[in-house]
Length: 246
Ligand SMILES: C[S@@+](CC[C@H](N)C(=O)[O-])C[C@H]1O[C@@H](n2cnc3c(N)ncnc32)[C@H](O)[C@@H]1O
Image (cartoon, rainbow, N blue to C red; front, top):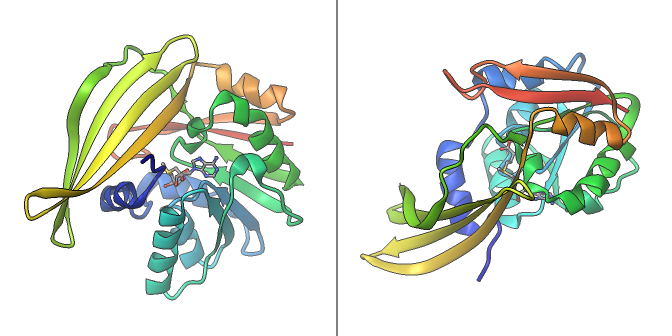
């Protein structure tokens, strides 16, 4: 069975990536200039970024391909008395009559799209952007030598609602396609026995320096700025955001 952001993966994700905050959140919030702005977060997952925006009364829609992630987002929203407009959709198939001032994909999620889906995904976001709208994208960069993991290794162990979930990982890097191919395995342990297993193929496209700007240009985007958000993911952990217009 192959589950993409399935039940166990979603539970583990939530333990340490529940709600955005700090420098990262501040960076994205700084683009909201007035309360009438319309925002869209494709690949919104568990609402990590979307919910703090909604809490501030900002109009933001979101979508994702994982029903488990979306359910968790809705549940968290309900606990906060919020009603999010989040729905199931693939970015490469997304269309809408609505036009947005700002489209954002934080946390490197765009790197989850293989090259063959990039063109349609970018076009779909471009189509829903207002003429003076902005897009903010993050990708995962290739920052040097990668330690492959040919054999399963335990990478996480969480105790959630009295149960234990163990995450195992295998990882290899394909230099030709720049794909970091990870397989994740989750075991739900009850009474010392594995009662559920989830396997998730998790290919991630790593981008070389300068490469993603060229991809955006080739797909009709303009007015580029590349921001470095220092300590964006916490002390010592910075990330880059690509800002552009249509
Ligand atoms: C790492 S999570 C990040 C969620 C969110 N961007 C954040 O900042 O926390 C990536 C999400 O992308 C979703 N995803 C992957 N491929 C997708 C696609 N083609 N279309 C829409 N969502 C996708 C996954 O289901 C997952 O919830």
